[in-house]
Image (cartoon, rainbow, N blue to C red; front, side, top):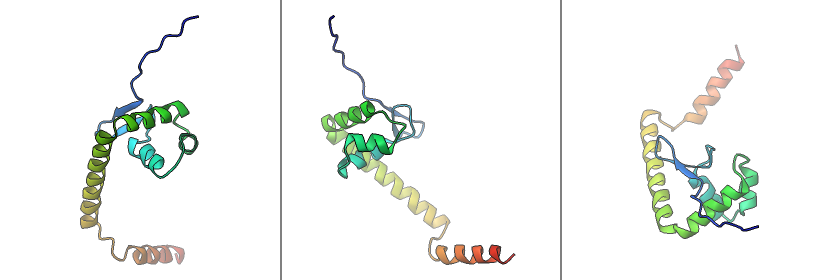
Length: 112
């Protein structure tokens, strides 16, 4: 039997918002890479995210190691985008005193 070696595209695809997802899951590229950079093994990542196969996790890590500069730039862009969204939300919904307001609301509901 002859083995045929063929290159496969990494299991990464952009969603409608421009975020990259792994395989057919909702797990983002930044989730997998962050776990990897935090020291998690591919096996640990696949165990933590059952929607991903071990092969997909290894493929994403391999892609990252081969295209580190591009992926790091994407991750930086995503961090900036998240910070902008967080700031916009904080302007709309003041986070100061939120814990106290939630406790007061719960207390009112419990007393009814």
